[in-house]
Image (cartoon, rainbow, N blue to C red; front, side, top):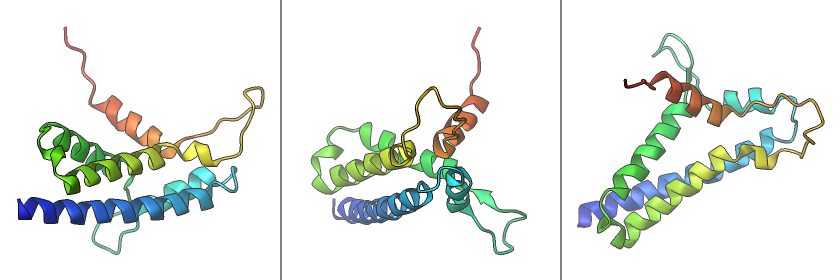
Length: 137
């Protein structure tokens, strides 16, 4: 139990910090709708320092990890009775909502306007999710 509580506190703290930093980045990049997508994509790209052949997008792996954490915590309801684990789950949901709600920080544009907005985080999620879809016959 002590190990689970310690891990949950560490995870909750990391998720809370990432949520706060991500929120600040999203708000900053959303100020200019023309460059918001490229700025957000740049913010969620792992800049290599020679350890990988090219820069790596981190949007999808981040979402995948958050969803894995949420699904792992949700499989055992008794685990959620531990307050620290519950906090980690809540922070995971909060981070997921911040990352997927980037359009909430952008100025409103009417549907009559020609806006081909691109939502980087959701687009990454659906693009990678579509690659794994198979049709069972």
